[in-house]
Length: 417
Image 1: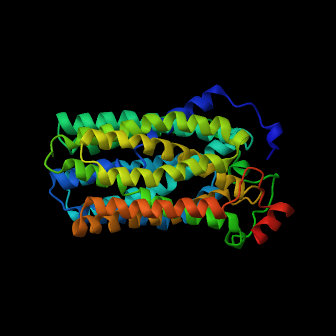
Image 2: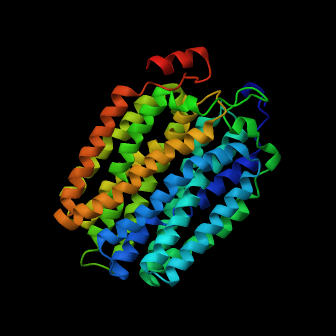
Image 3: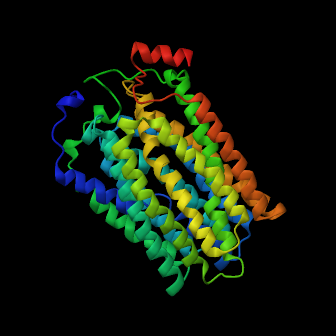
């Protein structure tokens, strides 16, 4: 591996291919999850608890697969083909769920989609780091996320229109088309441009990766993982619950309302991701991340109080701010805390598995609270959890910009933080 300052020029061709891959992959990786909740509760007459349970199954599959997926991405050179396998699994599972929306078909389909959701973001991030190098990584991640959010907007519009004008099941058909286009986009990336040493987070050519146990001694990384786990426990159920709340008494209109929610948030996420890409190095990571953590409790409280469908759509502006910042900074902060270890993707997978567990439990717990106490109680509960996540991050997680886990200074900080 060459040092970052000797990184070969990045071709416009590869930059463009990464842009389109992120655009098309946006909703393939999770199988249009929020729309699935609406389809099951309004079209198939599932209760909120059952819908939450199958979403939880998908989330748990992602949790179990993320750490092995990270180790796999660190180890292999065929990252492009791995993405093709992942999108094909999502397409097949989505078509199976649309053809036979019984509990076990949906549960198994969600499990396979969850496994793919563990693999795809890690592979794309590793390819991005391997192509652009560490110095350009923050800007590339911001660009990845901006294109991804643009893809989410387009897919949400297509899914909402298909659900309204054709049938709600057509929301899932869009996934197969997007998956096929992803396979074309990923093979437009020049495989020889991906430095697999850089993609692992190594700093020197031929460096031996650090022992896995080092990650368990990295206290800043562990506190960061705790904070984002609670964040996602608070966040994951909010949009599906809002969709279910919107669908009560309005089953035919709910796909369009959900599309409006997704589009509103994603449009705000685009400038947020660009902001992170351009300012994270200059301003530092922590001030930006604190903003993302701060808006989530407010969003939960507003959802609890809102009854007008368009008010719920407007509240999604806050989701755009928080998730737009979070989506880009997550990869950057993990890269900071694992710099020089050669274990970037493994740490990314492990941290992602932890917050994925929080997200999976969120849907199950919130669904049961809705069944017992109603939507408002569930939103108040999630808002309280979001406030706890903000407190952990503010107090326990240091600024990561200049942190290097493999350096003597980094080791000292790891031991004393």
